[in-house]
Length: 243
Ligand code: UDP
Image 1 (cartoon, rainbow, N blue to C red):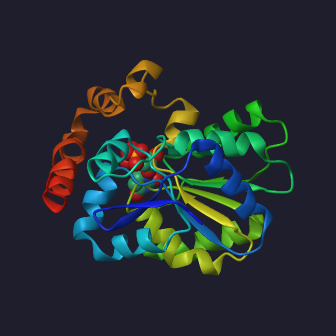
Image 2: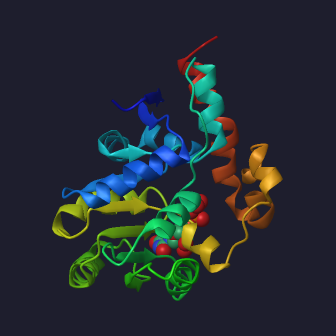
């Protein structure tokens, strides 16, 4: 039985990184299709006003707690999320464990970034098999072409970097049209980090829960997102769960 914590009506899997890896390998080894999401503070604020996105979060197979804020606010509601399980760390660990039997398609990010991310993953694991890479976009008129590419690639794992909520709405709408895909995961900025286009915060900042401040310093244009993550999210949780 999965241990889930509910925050703003969204179920979050209260599991460790190693449990997440075991579950993902299990999904890949079985038939059936699984949508994996990596919710963070901003995604939960978005879900509070975007009904379609909230429904996708409620139906996904696994919601990994991507931000320290989810851990902190879960504690406020009297629940425990044992650790932060980020998209980029999960993708790195999963791709390090895969062999040729599970080809991976990397979809999204700016042109050339997914290819570079795939090269990084391949340099770390010679058995990592790239089914395909493509920048693409979540635009409706492109979906047919993207789906044809993914189907031709016979990918088992599909990583989608269109940013949230677009990437997860795209997966929820189209996964059933890509029958070889067993796991589809919305991965946000993961390809940018793997490709070295963006630099992750130093480990000590991640440990004390300040990765958001690092990203803000690197991309001040994200201030609206930061405001939602750092102010609006805790306020919404406290309002729903007064002390
Ligand atoms: N992106 C894309 N197409 C779009 C919008 C975004 O490929 O229409 C990519 C963008 O280039 C980036 C990723 O989506 O690689 C998500 O980036 P963001 O920094 O927003 O993700 P986060 O990690 O903050 O969720």
